[in-house]
Length: 227
Image 1 (tube, one colour):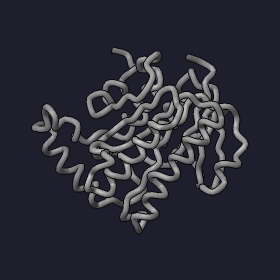
Image 2 (spheres, rainbow, N blue to C red):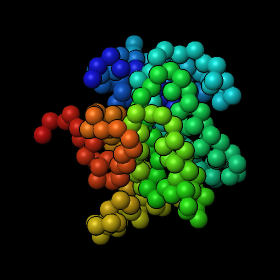
Image 3 (cartoon, rainbow, N blue to C red):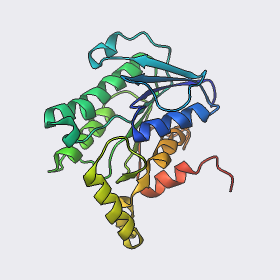
Image 4 (cartoon, rainbow, N blue to C red):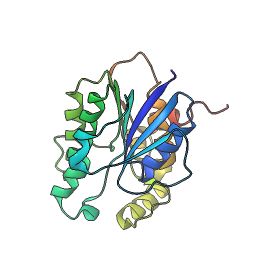
């Protein structure tokens, strides 16, 4: 795989910034188009194309042809302020990005979702994540890669007390999180970002939807590293 062009949404977040860095370091990608509403963290690159946008203007953006779409958009209900705003960020905007990617010729879509995502969940957060996964399956991408990490670790700019407590508890209990419980282990956002990029070439001929949870995310994040 070479000569690819990535479209990344959510590049200023914890996972998105890690995904962006992995894309910039990957020789398979000649250009990385990042949709953002504020300045990007980290050093610039000749491969990087920053596109400022407003959600309502996505359909009218003039962009180069895209091979792969990466979506790391996400917020919390606490930060969003309401379920309605949360759904706009975690469902409506990712779907708009997906439709934009299709218009630009993308064949694959990679999503950072959440462990426990289920359209039938009684939890609004997990139900929204599950509904997004379900809606994306109906779109004509050749491949859909979905990563479902549990609690993310890393240096956040914003304060999330609930997640901080979850990380502390998760680290304390991770050694007894075995078998089916392994999927709930905390995972570094850096690993998730790397795994998103690596998932595109994972089973390169495999089409349809593939879901990656804790163990698979850790495996993908090590692809290309020396043994």
